[in-house]
Image 1 (cartoon, each protein chain N blue to C red):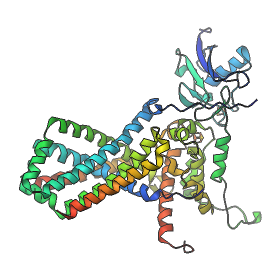
Image 2 (tube, rainbow over the protein chains, first blue to last red):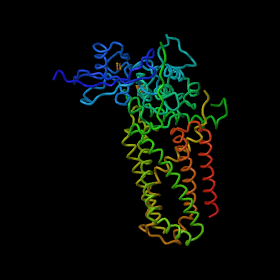
Image 3 (cartoon, protein in one colour):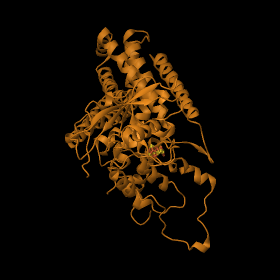
Amino acid sequence: MADETIILRVLRYRPEQDSEPTFQEYEVPYRKDWVVLDALNWIKEYKDGTLSFRWSCRMGVCGSCGMMVNGRARLTCNTFLREFYPNPITVEPLVNFDIERDLVICMDPFIEKLKRVKPWIIREDVKPVEDGPYEQSPAELYRYKQFSMCINCMLCYAACPVVGLHPEFIGPAALALGIRYLLDSRDQGWDERMEEVASHDGVWGCTFVGECSEVCPKHVDPAAAIQQGKVMATLDWFKRLLMPRGQR
Amino acid sequence: MRRPYRRPMPKTWWLKHPHYTLFMLRELSAVFVIYFALWTVCLVQRAGQGAEALSRFLQTMKGPGWILWHLIGLAFVLLHTYTWFATAPKVMPVRRGAEKVPDGVIIAAQWIVLLIVSVIFVVLLAATT
Amino acid sequence: MARSNEPAVWSLFAGGGALTALILPVHALALTILLPLGVIEADSEKLVAFLGHPLFRLYMFVLALLGLFHGAHRLRFTLIDLGLHALATPITWLCYGGATIGSLVALWVAVSF
Ligand code: SF4
Ligand code: FES
């Protein structure tokens, strides 16, 4: 049993020598309790030390090991080889991102998009620390809790065709995060955050394909967040239309 | 050395996974929503020309080609209904305090409303004509 | 970035989506299939009265207005997603322009009955 193997087809791209990415096949020992990330680490250890990929926690928490496994955006640390055995497994970097090297994607655009929604609590009146925390009831917490569970793994960006078709689209995770703050009772940054969330690149870019929520390992359901964001933006738009400035 | 590689998005992206294809079919239902809306305008317009014009119109619609076309349209409309109801609890979640009303309850409620509305529609049509 | 005026059309899209999801299945089945086939039997004179009733004409107009804008909105995004990104602006005008014209025709038919 010990010498059962499985084939991994891995997309390689070495910018100093390759003009475009190519697949390389590796034969890897098959273990029932191995995940794709274990197989990649085995390759790096015993076959090819030049193979590059990101990982850290190996327990679905850090969000750095996202890749395309047989065409689907997955966390490789919780995708078992046994799901595919004895068929070969194709591993590629997340789509809708540029490839930096091998399985490592260039995440700068994602970081820029995160910044656009101002993912922090904005206050008009900042309390001094001595006055204690801003209080919030459990009901207020539950309005946004689900949308705050994101680990920034970017699987939803790889699953979203709009991200591929319209690269300026702020995208599922960042919009869910923006909406998470819009729904937070402690936040007072509604207007400035809405400028981004309710923009053309914001929730209005979304066509509700819904695949972001299917691939999300943390059940954030960014698609739901964005649709709720559309409703919020619409009510806000009518409010602005009907009420003159200053009375809002 | 940095030389990021950009992979092009294939034009056929919507064939790459059944979920994307289903999404495209859902969006395609719009064609039949438009069609049935316009068809209804035509129906009323014919009715406005009198009983005879209306009979002729309905006689034409009895053709197997038309019936088949309308059956296909009905299938797309049902896909629209199914997906619309399924996503409603995501768009407008109902909360009771901290608890969210389960999606299944909201979806079932919408189908019940549909059933009631449908029965009323058919009864009205059958009773008055 | 500026807020979008998308809510103007999105609210029509959403209203139309809800209305058509609810009513179109029975509407299409009863009027476009069962009625021509004679499964639902109708006397032509009475049918004219039914279809010409102010409430039915009002319903026809609302269905056309919301249904056309719902459809136009989806069609617009679908055409763009299918690769017509460069034509986004003319597609947008064409879709909503068509829906507006269709709604006006429906209004005219409803009023001039
Ligand atoms: S929303 Fe989900 S899929 Fe998207 S980055 Fe966050 S955890 Fe990952
Ligand atoms: S290695 Fe941290 S999520 Fe997979």
